[in-house]
Image (cartoon, rainbow, N blue to C red; front, top):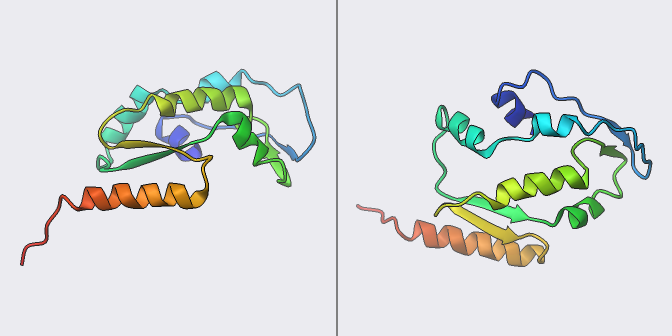
Amino acid sequence: LSMLASGLGAARVDFDFMPAGEFRPEVDTSKLEKILPDPDQIRETNASFAVPPDLVFILDVNPARGLKRTEGRQQRDLLFEREDYLVKVRAIFQGLEGDEFFHLDALRPMEGVAEDVTQITLDFLSFFTIED
């Protein structure tokens, strides 16, 4: 996200870390709206320098379930690892549409997700032929 933020002209993104298990309710959530990316601006910025992707895999995880995965960490990011922020980011990703976007349920077993990615990729590549 820091690369994304800098790509959008943000001068600096502040990160607040704390040991896992601690809670500091005084975290300033007003920063969230300032750094929440605008999908249209992301596309416009990327179009100016990046090659459009052929395939985009979006591994979707419910924010509450995703946060459970961070519980054992030594440090937690108080700004980005907040359910209210992750709900907004998830909505942005869920709104990405087009033939190149594949939304996959990442709460499924890893093997199933990997199989889907492999099959979608192979299906895509099957449209190309190698000429002698």
